[in-house]
Length: 380
Ligand SMILES: Nc1ncnc2c1ncn2[C@@H]1O[C@H](COP(=O)(O)OP(=O)(O)OP(=O)(O)O)[C@@H](O)[C@H]1O
Ligand SMILES: [Mg+2]
Image (cartoon, rainbow, N blue to C red; front, side, top):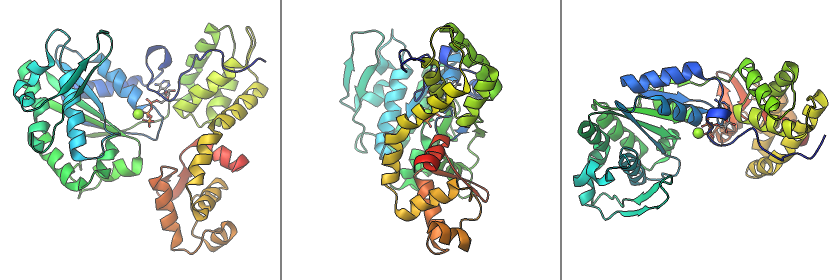
């Protein structure tokens, strides 16, 4: 064995492509087809399973003569107009080809603004643009119609991909904003949307409830885990490239330890690889050390996460870790783990759900993060 981390063959925590992307053929095809044929898509999965990577991959595959894909992240948008600024900026920059002035796309739209543009001389870097759109310069409808206007001018379809879309539920007066968006979007002929996000309970309440504006807005896609069989070839080839070996059995063990959560599979495989010397094959003992290393690496974050919880909430996590997925409300469990009165249980579940720490599937409650589960069991 040698010191960990000399080179990272495996990538985690950011969107991946090419060499670091595996599987998802069927999902990529489906998305690409939706982009090409104008079907709205709603893509949902738990955190770090690969939504952003998948959407970016499908975006790169569309026929650019017919379709332009525009990507924006809604996470930083805290108000309706912050979203409109982000949307307009993404549209103006990403629909302009390098040869033309981006303003040509929407001369009239931009004429009312005093935008701050900085164009970096490096041709590979992005243009940074701050438009300064306010209710005094544009109505919401004018902004929401911008993609359709650009699409018409260019004679192409536009697909607007909005990452972390669950953020819309957090905007002030959210329901009014949602109604506004839906009303404009549903009449657009050349513009489609791919809306994706991770907080399943929020995404489901935005799109799955009959009473909500976005009910039945598009095709719902729930991302599944990348199967172990797909990880096998990927991990083996990356090991082989560095002159290290790993058997199918150890890969299965590795994937199972982190319940096939994409980001953790990559992270753990990377740690394991860097523990081996040239020609060496990974063993269960190596894997055990690598997993301990992973737990250590996650400890600061997990400690920070539990530091924000009340005692009751932490006890509730401990009860779930101990296997109480359906019976948290029962007296023996409540007394055994000090969870308070029966009426406290729904409150605890909601608080943990809000923090994205648990997931609820029917009557069953789970901890979302497999490594956090192990950490709580062993060190919490
Ligand atoms: N198709 C894939 N092949 C290999 N690894 C992947 C794949 N998709 C995701 N990963 C791994 O998962 C990590 C997170 O991917 P990505 O950011 O796309 O997920 P996400 O679902 O958008 O996450 P978040 O919920 O944080 O937005 C990547 O850095 C990579 O390690
Ligand atoms: Mg993402």
